[in-house]
Length: 167
Image (cartoon, rainbow, N blue to C red; front, side):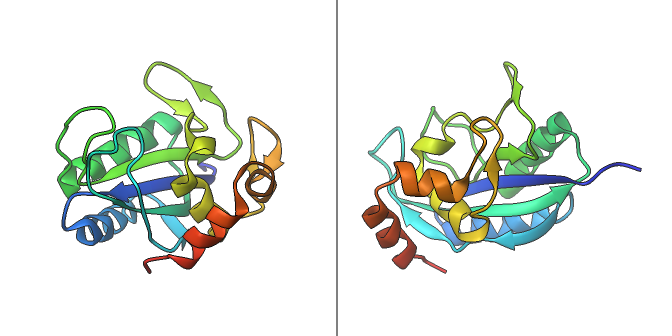
């Protein structure tokens, strides 16, 4: 029997209909993972390339029987099914699904890095994750999401973002 693995995914969209793309992605994700909790949806500034529309972002806490590379293929298939078109790095996206965590696993290959290497720099990942799973322990640093938020994030900005939840 395959073991269920705890996963955290980050979903974002900044191409209209942003909300529609996110809802479609969640429905497709349900075909391969057991969603336990969804964060609120947050509207955030773009990251990496600022001359584009704002994003809607959320985090998903789920369980899966898929192995890490199977999960990667699955989320890429979901992105394709939802309608993602390839642009340039950090460019506009109909849908973007990142594997932030996969249990306490650490993977570092050319095609897959877990935990997601940019997670700690992105309030649109850590704040929604803090909302749904503050006790989750980052396997790379051995500390909880709550500890990371309190130690490294400007709590005034976190509070503002939490108050500005879209849904």
